[in-house]
Amino acid sequence: MNTPSHVIRRGAELFFLAVLCFCMGDTAARLAERYPLSAQEGAALPASSEGSWGLSFQEEGKPPVANATADYLKQFDAFYARQTDEKVIYLTFDAGYENGNTEAILDALQKHKAPAAFFLVGNYLETSPDLVKRMVAEGHIVGNHTYHHPDMSKISTKESFEKELNDLETLFEETTGQAMKKYYRPPQGKYSESNLKMAKEMGYKTFFWSLAYVDWYQDKQPSHEEAFEKLLGRIHPGAVVLLHSTSKTNGEILDELLTRWEEMGYRFASLDELAAAE
Image (cartoon, rainbow, N blue to C red):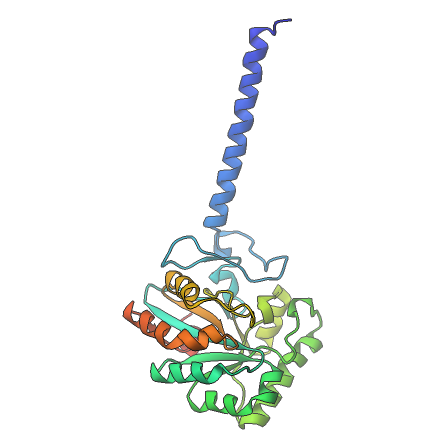
């Protein structure tokens, strides 16, 4: 039996509308992801429900889109990059243990007169006090990466949160004779809004990052070419760069990497400058 023409037309119209709505919804979602509203523009941007820091690189040489805006983080004295057009880089290293690469990293930083921040855990301070003392003597910041490197987003009590940071502060002071800078980086980038509030109440500034790459697997290190592709292609003004001092690749390439960034017109600055600027 033949289907009446008006039924065919109606079906075609409904199909067209369904496709149009889908496309509009998909486009809106893509735009929202690419251009998220800041908290000051009326959007609610809480810490991610997963509690994991994330970045999406949209354009080479430009800052990535993060899962929280600079405006949102600012209320907690937290940062992930400097909002600037100036070609400045803030170098940071996470150090959970020592495996022979930190000396080469410190040598490269010294050669380029590049200040850095090393976020340490208790194990590093316990096993490598001489390297920690060298970091301090050469003008680098030593920040708090917690004593035991737990998932801090799962810690809900103020007492437990404070103990992870205070115990590391105590060990650092015993090791160096100096008070620890109140700069904090959440282990694995996992956090919650309550964590950010507790860190601020303790007088800490929290530092995430705007550039990193997969460099932490000791038995699966990236090649030099892979490292340069990521770290040169994604560098941007105001970048907070996260590298791991356990990376053999980082130890081998850092001198050349800093040279190539300098050739691109970048300078290296301390996190103190970032905190003061923002």
